Image (tube, rainbow, N blue to C red; front, side, top):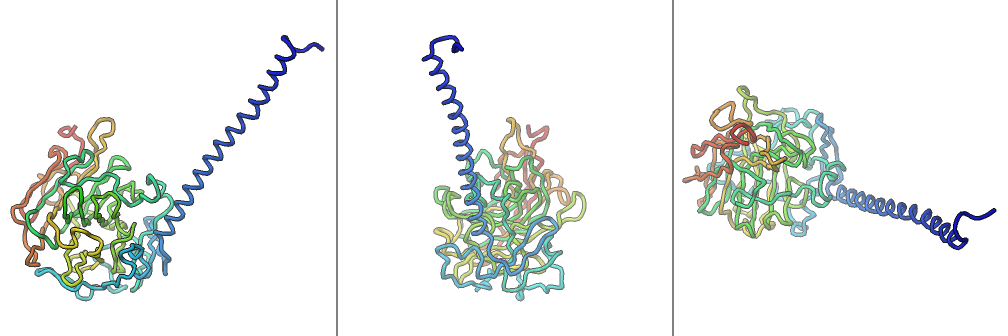
Length: 413
């Protein structure tokens, strides 16, 4: 039979090219799949290693009704002691000093048969024994939301209320500066603000800062809604710290070595059980931070009628706050990513403006600073910062202020 049209040599070359393409294309596809598999395996290994670092062996684990798992970890095995500066650290179970005027509970304990003043959902299913601390377990899906497993728990946008370049962040805060500070106090109204998208957050907190933005030390604590970090839209207690302007040090809660927890009842990063109701029942949470005269550690106390000396930031973590702070701030913050060129609908506080007053607008009260006399006092000539008052505002009365707002609205386009 005659070969196909054309010379035999041409036909032979065509057959060879066809065979080459037949084998080459699958091999390229296999190569791509192998590359994807390698990257997938690398990510999985990174996640597993990070989970092992974060989730310490538990003496007891408690499944919370909200889906969280709380691990009761021996106090000496907590993440803080992975920090190279804390390898031989001796745990300070109680502060060596208190600022004048601070009330506290000497026992620092609530009976296992009594209901804690600060209620978290996991309390319904059990308690951590003394000698352990409760740690919210990090899950694989938590790390998958981060840009990398190593970045989980770190801030994505590096701004402070004093940073004019922070286009993504909006604030309504009260501040005092111009002295040396050794602590701060406030009672924060508890709400559950709504966020528009996963990468935005809404929080109420205090900042204790030292240095400028090129070399900033901060201690921070309060309440936040942050779906990117926690996977839901519920209000949770949080802490944060940094010693280098949020560049490479510090993190939320216990998600990196640093903060030393001693309390066995409150889990950082866990939900609060009760939120204020618009026009109804109001809830608030007291925060106190002060620098211990004995060891220089910065202690965090939560509570009101019953106090929880939660733990401390060791002085050795800091470069500037090892001495004192230069700025104290209280208030609300949101991230506004300006989706589709519009202002976010993420709420601050109750989601209502300050003018709506008690029961409707969120508030801070009992504002105090610890000055060089090591005594609590009211703020002197406090200043205010409102990034965009038509979206989030505040009304300041010295040691008390209302703040908040709905975000995008007819007056906040």
